[in-house]
Length: 542
Image 1 (cartoon, rainbow, N blue to C red):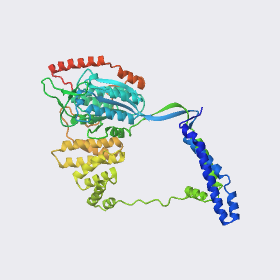
Image 2: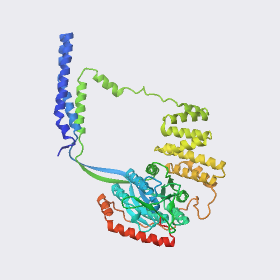
Image 3: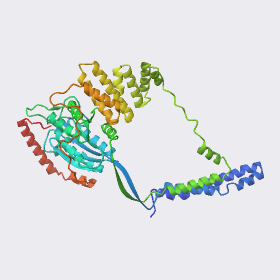
Image 4: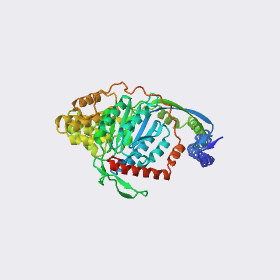
């Protein structure tokens, strides 16, 4: 059965053909009239030339209009081959994530970036884990992005019975969920959290080291601000009822724990996405683009196959036939369009900043690059060049400002060079500033790890990272060690798990709707009683 995407366009096809045919006849008559003014012999030649040209043009217009109407018929089986990555998103839904030092809150921003990440990685297998004092698997690995987005929207601190933040448990459960897959794709755990952990740091770091030995790549997405912020308590209508308090009646204030997040990332050989980055989902996407994906094939049967190319091809043939049979300039134009060499291509003009750089005038080159940045010319490349020039002339303020902006580029090459140069800058600063040496070395180490995630095989970045680690003094009190972890798996080989089944959107909606109002009230009452008990014992529930 033949169907059309735009039936109204199909109905107008005869009218279009008639209009083009009449215009062609009028043009032919005008041409013959002009020829007859010169001589009768020329008029006779003009009458014989292109006698049926109007019919060819009318047929081409008819075919083109039919193609625009979108004809469809028949069936087709398409085998789609894609490469998928195994990725688990772990979302911190503890009460500290309700702090509003991010827009609209830490949890709200984490949900927004998670939805964008699921949308951007639509061809990959993605799982979802929610955690607070306990860790809960919300979805196994699936390609059903719409169901995952529904689950992410339904996450709330009231759906868990245990408050606080247990980072060691979510690292363990995320690893187990990823190790259930037997294919050759890389395994990635993306952790959205503010780092307000209730378990001990040595316990978390030990689990992070086991995660690295198991071959799971860790990406931590930091949420929240550095300054302490209160945790608002809101009613069902969204109004603020007050602020969360501890057992002594003091207002609880929470802040992002950068030291904890950096230590975990170092122990797992992972990366930290800064909370100050505007596009966190885009940064995660750029990091995982370099990871290994396993091939998979899917057979899809589609009905109503588009056939617009058939009438379009007929129209092109008619136009070519019209051009070939005409003794006019049409053939010459067609010949020139097909075989004329493109020798007139514009040649690249060297940038004045590049010329000065080659002559060794780094300050003059920096001035040219800064002028490009101020005038909005060159984009991220101009920022990278200005920052590199600032690095060459030891202008720390210029280098940090320009390279930090270039490090947010969506171009992987520009971003790699920017973070590499930032690492070099912090490494130089650490050698000259003994008072801030530890902080600068930690920042250099973080930058080089981010560079290696973009280009894992870069020898210069590996060398500088090793140099940074050697210059870092050993940590005390159970801190993370930067020494390479052994390849042996202390916990033995993981057991095989059955292949997880994908969720449909209807199943996901059913899961969310199953949490009725009565059950939510029961959970809230339970959480309230547990919070009162923790106030007596002094346990932490945010």
